Image (cartoon, rainbow, N blue to C red; front, side, top):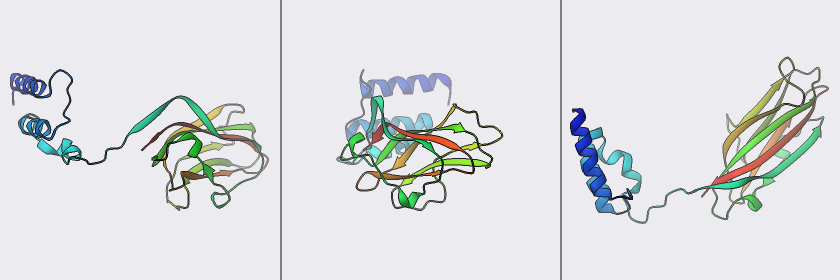
Length: 183
């Protein structure tokens, strides 16, 4: 399909949506699907999630300022998932299903043990893979904040779990800051 045809088809899409570009009605979605089938070759595939009236759509809430949910400083021994529950109800809404968090991990003292880890998971789960920040004794910089931004599932009580693995001679600080959430 030629360049001019794509321009014409996209112009038709703009006319269908109006100036605001809204495709909030089923009629507009179907018109968009018909037009895009010829342009993109996908038709309803990329708007399929919005076809049924009343279908729920996720809502992302981004906070203007992050809020600290965990501030665990000067830790010299490990704490494991089964011994931690972090309640995020004060930082999320009653409808929240996921939290968007920043995990900060800092070494105050780098010890002789090889690695230290800071991990999170949805409360009560045992996933194979989960968000984790790691420091290794040969590359860790004292005072430097290593971090990971993650989307983490919340249980029905809006709780998550964390684990801090500290090896011989290390002292670490671990923080979880809530950046937002998804309903």
